[in-house]
Image (cartoon, rainbow, N blue to C red; front, side):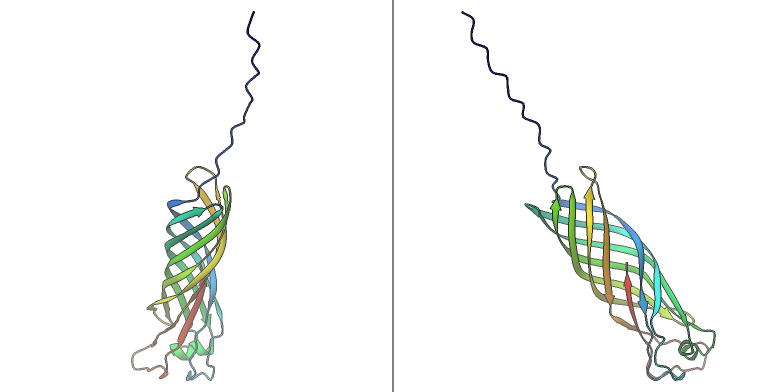
Length: 209
């Protein structure tokens, strides 16, 4: 007697593995930054004590590096970056003319580089990560009327973003960070023998990379 026919093997479809965001990573970031700067001096001889806010904007680019740890759908990590920056802004006013001893003088504020060290936390929906970030920032501010003076200043950074994985080891993100920096002070002179006001202008620069 022939053996009874066997039941067909049940088909079990393959399940794609859930993407793992954990591990060390590095890459390149770039974007456009914008913000405001203001020069103030209560002793300015023009009779005005401030330039008022003026726009500072430009491009930034540099390396990014970090490490993530994933627990279920939650991702935690630390991240740093160091960008070259071309943020620049100028303002013409009687205040600047008084500082520069020239009615055509312009107050100028530049940012030449920006570094950050941040914590990152987020929620992963498989290959899409929604996250927030916050930490410290440190950068170089250049300011002056006729010739720029360097000043390195610290501050803080906070923001949010969305990152998507389009390969096993490749991701891309869109992020909006806000940077707030300490005030900087400088003393400038347009020509020999002229002494600016006793209290040099204080130049806060709030820029967004």
